[in-house]
Length: 111
Image (tube, rainbow, N blue to C red; front, side, top):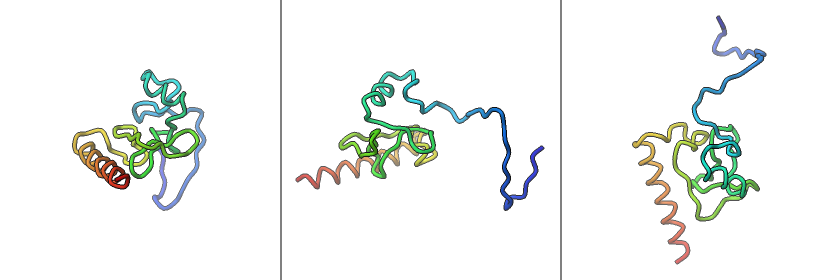
């Protein structure tokens, strides 16, 4: 058993670590052809935690070069690094409303 006081950090070395957090964010090996293609074309990149797609605060994709992709938004489970939960209808409804506001604001700026 592993015993530690909550305020006392500890370090351990392991031979293997198993990621049991769900789907993989390794786009180049994805079974999803859209994700593979977007990654191969440089339109998306993995977030810094390796949990999904990196997006800006207004849900636009971040490309491999680190720039915001204008007009291309993402909502769904690959937002785990930014919003841990984004898979069930309540969370998706909230994020969809936020994206709609961002898109509307972007269109209003063009007029």
